[in-house]
Length: 217
Image 1 (cartoon, helix red, strand yellow):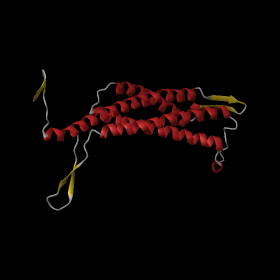
Image 2 (image 1 turned 180 degrees about the vertical axis):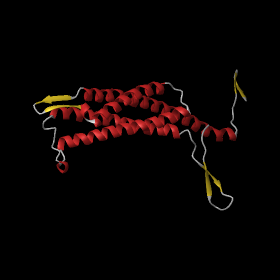
Image 3 (image 1 turned 60 degrees about the vertical axis):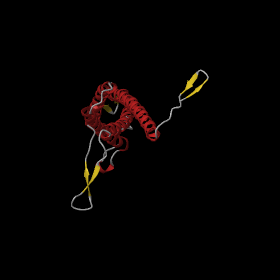
Image 4 (image 1 turned 90 degrees about the vertical axis):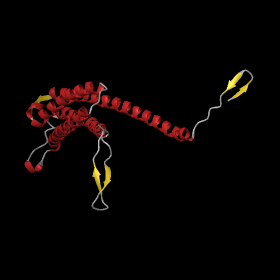
């Protein structure tokens, strides 16, 4: 402490321990800030990716439901083929689940049970949409190109408008599938980030190491 005129100046000194701990504290604060930004970004991206398939699945569903054609060659409707009926049902399930999950995700109360639930359901929805899109695409391919081995002629030459709408519906379904692939990755990351990296512990019988699982409570 030293006096200068009427003012008193206190010379503050820091201990070596405080000097050593300052960078660690700054790094911890920066890490917490980055973690908060990452969590906020993931929640925003996840909410958007859950809302987007609602419109996509409804559009694909309505397009298929209204798809029918009648001409001199006969009539055809989506209801005539099981693959197209499956596509309609899959898109309906996708739209309903997307709306419900978007509402739940918007509430910032994450739990381990909710992480496991989203991980499981996102995987199920992804495979449902994939199977519906793949089976419908196979039917569209056969309708467009036929199959000479089974003497199945191309049908799209006679029902072109029907085939075009089916192709559009299947394409929209695959866009929704892409959203759910990303959602599956996000839900997997959010689930398994709750668990610590397995710790290695020495084996008493040798030099090998046993892997001990650990998780964040």
